[in-house]
Image (cartoon, rainbow, N blue to C red; front, side):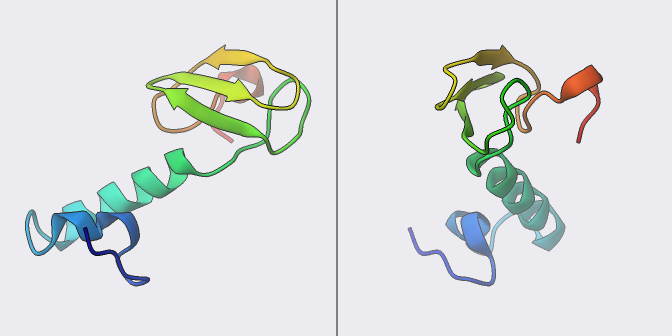
Amino acid sequence: MGRTKKVGAAGKYGPRYGLKDRRLAGEIEAEKAGKHPCPSCGSKRLKRVSTGIWECFKCGGKFAGPAYHPPSPGGRRG
């Protein structure tokens, strides 16, 4: 599975599905894979465990939220 700097995680699709769709998929996959700030303790240790389940590896909190980005205070995407 070849990936390059230019296409990132969307490199697994090769030339299929069109440029716009691959870029969108690459942005979503990069966002869900990164570490995010925890809504309860504030540390950047929140990681996606499963679809819609996020866990902070510092305070041990688990949150349910959107599938591709973590929950934010007040329910707004931040």
